Length: 274
Image (cartoon, rainbow, N blue to C red; front, side, top):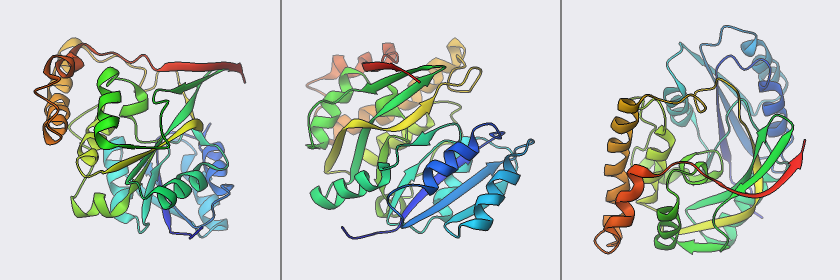
């Protein structure tokens, strides 16, 4: 297998309790040709000290620091600094399966796909839930992927960045970025825009990522009704444009418009104890 450079972008804010576990899981990846860009979003705890320890001992780690302005601008700063052929995103609360990057790279090299998506683990205290949605694969067309997404557009599986693998040339050529105007679902907007330029999607039907559901986190916080409607209205324009680009909108208009009523209900494949 060729060893293209993979840039892993890690935004973190006040992550002193979890960032070491996250960075260790990246450092110990079976795939070694990595550039790890850790963006400190103005943390006020000991996060910086932990990141600097890794940067001092492993030249693959690159430390960026900025004033607190949110996860979107942190990811965008990481994207602008990255040099890799492929991009991978990891949040500071979470961690990777040891072979995650290796399996993503193998998939794109074997099948020539522009995006790869995998199942993941959701960690809820001592319970670990295996989450996924697409059962087919290993490669599907963009249209087939969009049909699967139509059934559950609010699922984390489709919305987040961290269970996916991206081709850097697409992001750079079309100037894709996360919107700082959205307080939540900014990653789903990024994915919808990216999918405009995808031909084939690789599907890995086993978990490669541990997502930690943290009490009081932004993901868990429920936005108010008006914010929810505003965000869904913004996202729906991107969502609709994707289906129009594939001539699927008129045929499935009513199902696509059900996006406004969709709520996250990721499919549970297995439950186990931590």
